[in-house]
Image 1 (cartoon, protein in one colour):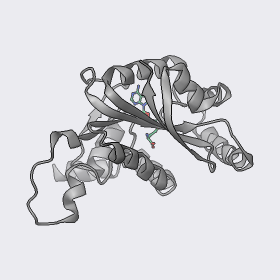
Image 2 (cartoon, rainbow, N blue to C red; image 1 turned 45 degrees about the vertical axis):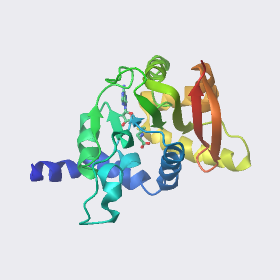
Image 3 (cartoon, rainbow, N blue to C red; image 1 turned 180 degrees about the horizontal axis):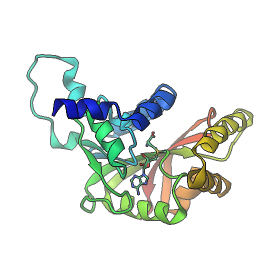
Image 4 (spheres, rainbow, N blue to C red; image 1 turned 45 degrees about the horizontal axis):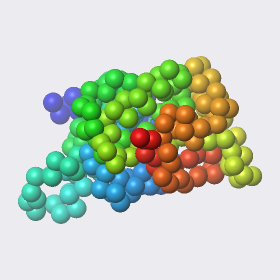
Length: 226
Ligand SMILES: C[S@@+](CC[C@H](N)C(=O)[O-])C[C@H]1O[C@@H](n2cnc3c(N)ncnc32)[C@H](O)[C@@H]1O
């Protein structure tokens, strides 16, 4: 069991992804978590969670600040969980954050009940998908969000000022490395108006937004239109 975890910890694509983006996305992860905390938006589901870095330090681990002190069981509503289609990433994510539940599954066919989540987050998990898959995912997000629930989405936007134009060039260079369908879908996504246009067309209304110029990234909290 222990060696199984050790092997999963050394899953190379996970290690490389974290090495490349772990530090770069740290502020962004904190911002997403802060949105959930502020609104008490649990249960919280992170879809297309990849290496699960968004959820690290979550679950029972957050109470690890008081080692050796017995704490009551978590209130079920504190539940934070991740989902990804890649079994390799899920195993790696679970090995890095053993107290967080990670589910291997399709974001376009979420294995959760209607209205069971108070928040769903997705970071960089839209631009790389085909338009059909994106649409399917948003249908599922709407279905699983409870009344008053929020979608917290992080993804690329068309540049909005001089700094974000430079940021967009940087993002473009990284996306080129991903190549193939990922790259083509991403180009189409931004050309079509990026995250804000996509959310609008998917029936979501923005509640708040933060722009990160270095990368031309939007962090958007949104609610479904009724
Ligand atoms: C660009 S990565 C983003 C990872 C992570 N959210 C982050 O911010 O670093 C996109 C992720 O989407 C996952 N993915 C692709 N198709 C999926 C699907 N149908 N359902 C769930 N996850 C999917 C991939 O395995 C990959 O981990």
